[in-house]
Structures are given as C-alpha cells and as structure tokens.
Length: 130
Image (cartoon, rainbow, N blue to C red; front, side, top):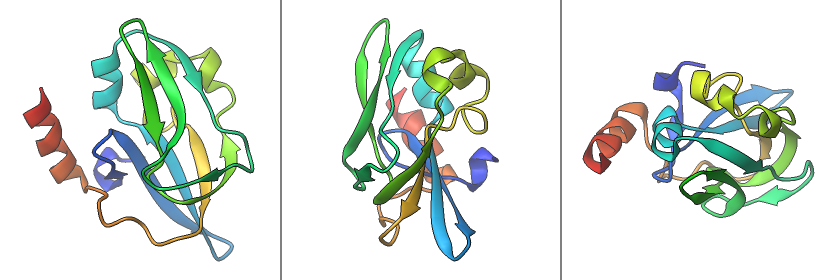
C-alpha cells in the first residue's frame, strides 16, 4: 500500500478501506513514524477474530523496550482477520509497516470517523511532534 493513500489516526494507526463483495473492509496497521518512535519492539497483542472494535477505542497493544503503547482502532466493526505471524516477527514493522506489517482487517459497520487524517496532515502532525 502506498502510505500517501492511507488515512491516519492522530495516535499513529493507519487504515486502508476497500470494497469486497459489497462490504467495506478496513486494513489497519501502525505507521512507520510510530515504529521509529517506539524503537525495539518486543511484543504485540492482537485482537481475536470476531471481536468487535470501536473507532477511537483500544484493540490491542504494542510493547517496546522503552514503553507499552495501546493500539486504537481507526474504524468500528468486526475483526475478520489478524496478521497471526506478526507477533513472532515484529521486525516486519521496521521494514514494511504498510504491506506485510498490517495488524488486522475489519468489516466496517459505521461511517469512517471525520477525525481521520490524510497523509499530508498526518506528516505535518508528526513533524510537530518530533
């Protein structure tokens, strides 16, 4: 996925929404900026397939040697798939956070939140944070 085509939460999660069989499916991950800020990742908790997630609420966590950070869902819906290999190979997030490093896929049940940021706005926010 092209990082410039994604939408972002101000908490550094990204989302890509596509249509599949009349359903909106959101692929969710964390941004390269977030991975860079967290540095050495050691653990990730994924949601269960079938779990309900709500936009703006926690769905898991990622732990680095310096912090534990909650992961927030950018969309509301039901988890249809998780990247089961990711917790055992967190280095993928360093090399490919927008393709192989996706975390979950969600069958979207509500409109996308207006608070999601486009790439340019997210980049400005990250520039202000560093």
